[in-house]
Length: 154
Length: 251
Image (cartoon, rainbow over all chains, first blue to last red; front, top):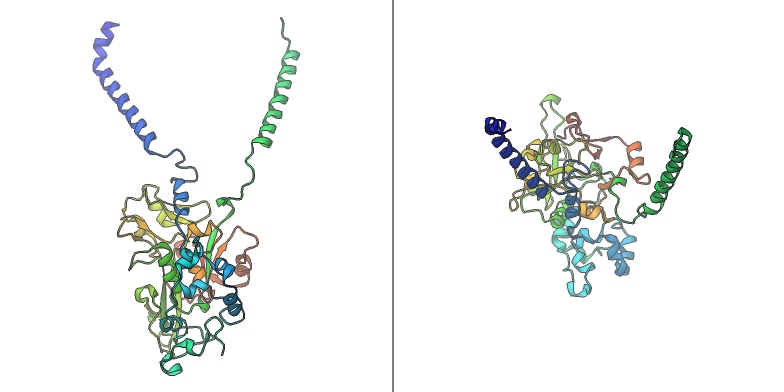
C-alpha cells in the first residue's frame, strides 16, 4: 500500500487539486446562477417580474373618464370620440393615480402645435382625414378660438 | 411466517389503491387555486398596424418616449414617411424615406401630390423566431412565455450582437446603462390589463395591440378579413407585427 502511494503520488496530487477546483467551480456556479434560471428558456425568469414592476406614465382612458364626466360626454359625441384623453393632454398617471389629484394639476395643451401635428395638410396623410393648411385656414388664430377641442364640429 | 404469491399480490394491490387515492387527494386539495393574477401562458401578444389610418402625427413616438424614458435621439418606435415615384422604370424605383427625429414632432408638410406617399410606423416585431435572441451569448434577451422579446438588463453584457442581428433595426445600446434596449411591447402595461402607450395614444386607431391566444380578440376577424403582411417575410423571423395595406416598396 505504502509502495502504491509513493509510486502514484504524482497522479494523486493533481487529481486532488482538480477535484478541489471542480468543487469551487460548482460552488461559485450555484451561488451566482439563480435557482429558477432556465425555467422557461435560457434566461432568468425573475427578469419578467423586474420588467413588469416598471411604473406606468399613461394612466389610460378608463381612469380619466371616472372623474371627467362632462368632457367624456362632449368627446363621445364628436369626431374625437376615439382619441384618448392623454393623446392630447400627455401622460397623467401622476395626476390620475395620486391620492390628491388636484395637487398634480396637468398643464393645458399647447394648442398651436397640438392640432397642427394631426391636421396640417400633408400629401402622405390618408385622403379622407380632415386636413387644413393652417396659415390659410385661420390666418394665425388658434384653433380653439372657433373649435371646441373635445367636440371640434362648429 | 410464509408469504405466498397470493398474499404478496393482495398486499401490493391494497398499497397501490391507497397510494393512488392519496395522490388524487393531494391533487384535489394541494392544487393551487385559480388565481386572478396575470397568466403569461394564456397570452400571445402582437400588433396590427393599419397603414391607411396613420397620419404621421408622432403621438406614438412621444408616448413611447415618455412611458419608457427612452433617451433622447433613440427610438423604440418611430414613423417613416415614404415617397414612391411610380412613374419611371419600376426596377429603378428607390423610395424616398425620411424620419426626422423618428417623427417625434410629426413631419414637415409635404405637398408632393404627384408621388405615392404614406407613413409607416415601426417598432420591434416581437418575432417568434427572433434572430436577436438566437445570437445572445448570455441569455440576456429572450422570448417571454407570452411572446414578447425582452432584455434582462442584469445579464446584458453590452456586446451588441443582438443589435446587429435584428433585421429591422429595432435595438440600440442604452447610452447610460450600456445594455441593449428595445421595445418591451409595454410589458409593464399589458400585464396589468392596459394597452401599450403607443396604442393608447394613437388618435386614429392605426395601431392595435392584439392577443392571438384570446379567442375573443378582434385579431382573428382582422386576419381573416384583410390582406396583412409582415416586414421582410423572407427573413423567416415569424414577426408578430402585421401591417394592413402595406406597400411593396417598404423595407
